[in-house]
Length: 99
Image 1 (cartoon, rainbow, N blue to C red):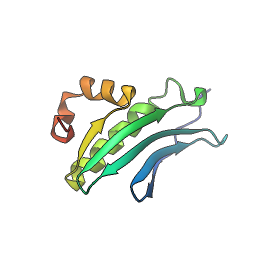
Image 2: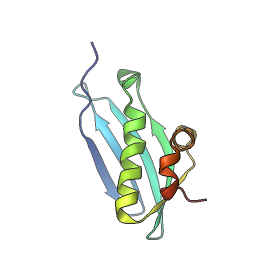
Image 3: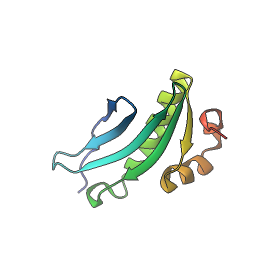
Image 4: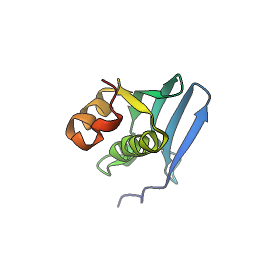
């Protein structure tokens, strides 16, 4: 039985940050980013441990970043291969894709 996914938390550390989902077991799925100026984010890593596999955790993390960027008028450069693949699968995110 899989654990129900918790809410996504944003940890903002100035020029860097991450979105994280924590499981009751202590496992964390994360997507890290770097801020470039006021209007650009670079998604540089998505990590999903085995405890979250098959639950859509990675997609939830990227989706949250897209929603936040859209509402803040920011653009995203998806350097992380997983995030880049999600942008290719979701043409409706083109408005926040820097490129």
